[in-house]
Image: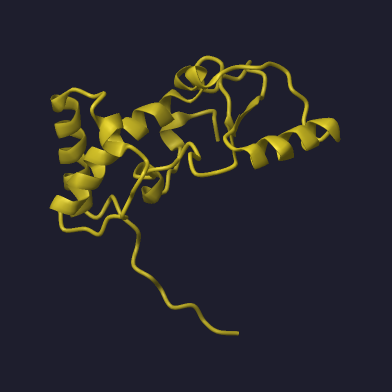
Length: 154
């Protein structure tokens, strides 16, 4: 999968996910690429963000049981480096959802995830470009879910 980024297949819903970094979870887990993206020589690492007291209890129990090995500690500020594409997407989601709505497509109701605050970190031109791009992709049917298909019953 990681050898050729041009062949990555990303579901449309992932391009507008308002919580790709698991803010509403007890524990969020991701790939961790020390240079912002995978390279053949990179050591395989996973990043773990513990967000709640219950998450910390589960994390500590997994470490104590030997199910997790901590190779290095980092902090939340490092996510910009470790998952830079998620940071860029998070800053783009508000504008992308607005673009989809302008195109007449359904968008999820999102509350308490500070999407507008994230978008405010972009320039107006960046937000406009994201919104227009999402609008145009949505109009062409390239941003959204495929229609539901009935399954055969067994």
